[in-house]
Amino acid sequence: QVHLVQSGAEVKSPGSSVKVSCKTSGSTFSTSTITWVRQAPGQGLEWMGGIIPMFGKPDYAEKFQDRVTISADDSTSTVYMEMSSLTSDDTAVYYCAREQTFFGLDFWGQGTLVTVSS
Amino acid sequence: VLTQSPDTLSLSPGERATLSCRASGTVASSYLGWYQHKPGQPPRLLIYGASNRATGIPDRFTGNGSGTDFTLTISRLEPEDFAVYYCQQYGSFSQNTFGQGTKVEIK
Image (cartoon, rainbow over all chains, first blue to last red; front, side, top):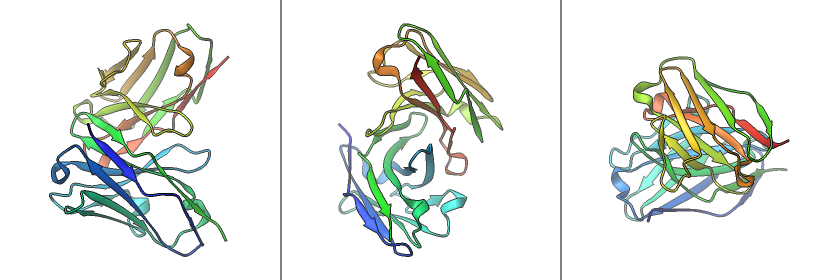
């Protein structure tokens, strides 16, 4: 069974950075596609970007290209999402999910609440 | 861009729900998924490839469509089906996007 376990909730100050982890198990990490999706309060789901650890090169939605870095650590089967220059608009629940070609986002992490507040 | 309609659907348990998702361009190889999202939980994959039910999804959920127009039908609403539903285009990082969601609420 595939499991994605995310790091815990974070409270950050405006202008700071946050790094959220997503540890995977139960599937072939290096060939999986791991994506990041967020949901701000009262808003819908927003695709942020993703990475295939085997290839190592992440890709991002245009909106997040300048502030988000997605990386992978093969040794721990963990994917990271780091966002910089946080504002209150970044307050959201951040999810990681596994995407399988044709099969969609079939397994999800539990979500990580990031609160940006002064 | 994926546009879902309606924004909100007010129905009673036992009724049929029909949700629409329209793409601004052709969705390649029907890489179109539907997700159910409830508060406090991660989204759950219902349908992939436009019309294939994911593992464990009841057969009251049906996905149809191709090209630019897709629908999700819930044949008879159960109490646990009241939630927000999203369509998603996937399969290519450059085209990965969600619709804005349709809330199915109890009338």
